[in-house]
Length: 329
Image 1 (cartoon, helix red, strand yellow):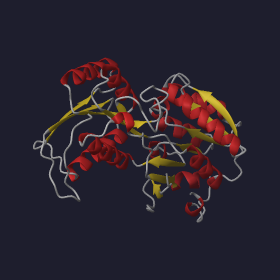
Image 2 (cartoon, one colour):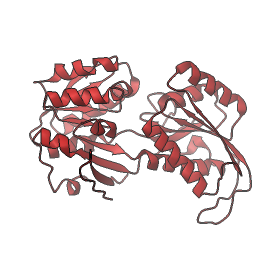
Image 3 (cartoon, helix red, strand yellow):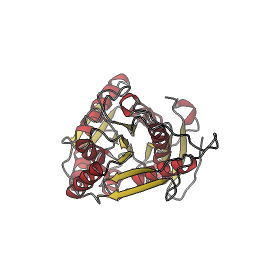
């Protein structure tokens, strides 16, 4: 996968952009042929979330661009569980009983819930960090289940390289995560491996709830040079409190989500979720044409954004080097 970042300086400052098996139908788009059949797709989303909404939009835009028009040859049943596990389970059970042509699951909880209910209906996921850890697929290149999709696993090596560029003297990285989440543990393992390669040390601070995040920052103060936050739902929910605590303690905050930068964190290499949804839509077209999820490799993101909060950089007296982008390959 080629790393193709875009750079954005946020917070009202400066913005710089760098660049089911057996169906057989034709699609529009470049071929100019409209799909002749009507398809039913269920979309299940765990909660109202900016990134998930963007991914869903990208997915729908791709379908429309390929000739699948809602209300004409496409029926969409969209449900949002509003972060309620009982509601999520109920939606998954209903979707499994309706025998859709395809189900899109947005985020890990949605994908896990629907995968438990059906092994027959093709399932696509997006915004799932580690599909193997949650047993959605057996292998990334050959899922061997009725499930495949796109991951939002963050490029940790590039994140740490960004840390070295913005804070050249950084030797010790603090990482805050929920140790009860399998996906967060998986990201921690990748962070430990990357830190070893880059000759960095890692100090862990675990939390069980979002309210514990400021205390975790305080526990790292004086022990680390920067803080890095992976895509951990518990910590993401406390992004404003985390950014505020990090800035008060003069610790540069790097994260896998741009929401932290919007909240006052220093920088992130984040995923373009609308583009990720578009990419997932391309996989949906293949399934509706007859491809089987069992043999469709899980895909990594193709687009990333480097986002730097210039106000926070000034607060922490951090200079943004002109040579930042060319060094990130």
